[in-house]
Every structure is written in C-alpha cells, then in structure tokens.
Amino acid sequence: MARTQKYTEELLLEAVVKYAEAESGKIKATELAAWAAVNISGLEGVRDYHFMRPVRERNLQTGVVMVRHKLCTVRMEEINRARSLTSQISRNTLLKASAIEDFMKQPGFVQRRQIAETRETVGRLAAKNESLSRANEALRAENKSFRKGMEQLTEDIRRLQDTQGRLTKQVTYLMKASDEKSRKAALADMGLTDRNVDLDVYTRSLEQEIGSVMDLRKVLGKFLLEEANPAMPGAESDGSKTLAEEVLSGIDFSGGKDGED
Image 1: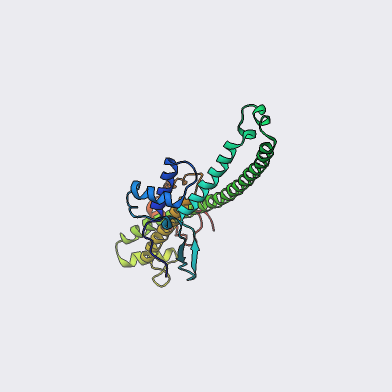
Image 2: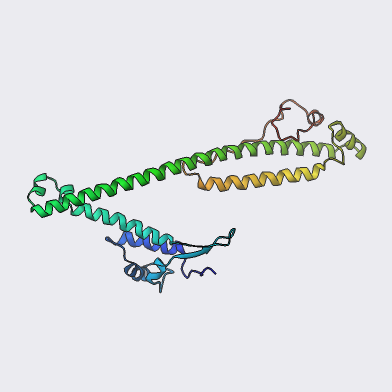
C-alpha cells in the first residue's frame, strides 16, 4: 500500500526553489531541510529524507506499484548539475580569463588539467544541448498533435451546437401545434414516428454529448503550450427561412453538415 506523504510535493518543491534563490553552491538535503523548517510555512519539522525518499504509487488501471523520485528531488539534481558545471567553468582560466596570457602564465600541470577540464565541460555542454534539442522536438510534435485534436474538437462542438439548436427549435415549434394529431402528422412528414425516435430524449442526449466534448476540449487546452484555445463558433443565422419552413425541411440525424446527403 502506498505511503501517505507527510508533506506535499508542491510544498517541498517550493522549498527547493526558494532555497536555491537564497543560497549558492551545491544543495545538500540536510542543509535544505534545516533552512526549510525555519523559512517555509508548513514544513516545520521537515527532515532531509522527506526531500530524498522516493514515492511509491499504485497504477489505478494495472494495480502495479511504481517507484519514482519526488519533484523536489529531481529539481535538486537539476540545480546541482547546473551549478557544478557553472562552478567548473568559473574556475577555468582558459575559459574565463580576459587575456590568453593569464592562462599561459600558469604552471604546465595546471594548464594540462584545465585543458582536460575544458574538454570535459564542452562535452557536457554539447550533451546537454543535444538533450534539450530532443526535448524541444518532442514538445513541438506533442503540441502539433494537441492543436490538431483541438481543431477537431472545435469542429465537433460547432456541428453539435448547430444540430442541437436546430432540433430544439423544431421540437419547440411542434409542441406548440394545436393538437397531438397535428404534431404526429408533422413528424410523419419528416419520416419520424413514436416508434423510431424520441425527440425529447434525443435533444437531451445531444446536450450531454456537447458537454462531454467541451470537457475534453478543456483538458486538451491545459497541455497546449504554444497557442490559446480556438474561439467558440457562434450560432448560425436562420437566414430568410421561417420556423415552419425549417421544420418542414426535415432534420438531418446523420451528423453531417447542412447540405450534405
């Protein structure tokens, strides 16, 4: 069974970020915990292992227990790697000296060591740049996929709103007919009978379907990193048709756009 965490990951992550802003150098869990216990509200009594202990989570679909690093642990490692590289560069005269003569004045063994460090530093920077480039490519591909899904959902919403709005008007008109016989006759003219469709139920199902699609659209919108959500299309004009003419023109239950067979 997964262990209940005493401190939330969000609060622990906040402590790491604020500690990094306040203190320079490598982040050590013991020093971080001592600082956070005093400076972060809600982390009184926090210990170093709260930042470093992995999290055990059960997958709700498969039931498998997975182990992962906490967000605060991952962030600590990222900051330490960056600071280690920065510190190494700042100490290297070959990279930081304003004049090459400063490097040449050093003893030979120091020059050789700094040349070796420079090679290592350049290799690490190149690897980091390659990793970031791959991550950016993956994000661009993911965003492209999300944008395509958003466009499809927007079109689905437009189609459903149009169909639901048209059907609501038609049902409202029919309910205002003088008597039940007239209503059934009007429905029969459009090929609808009590046996093959319940207009009231169908109208409600369309409203539920629109709500479901809207929820999906909101979820996708949270992950879209580069563009805002597309604007919701407005309801279409009735044009020059009267409501009676619109009713007699029939209802398209196939889900296609107006004018399609």
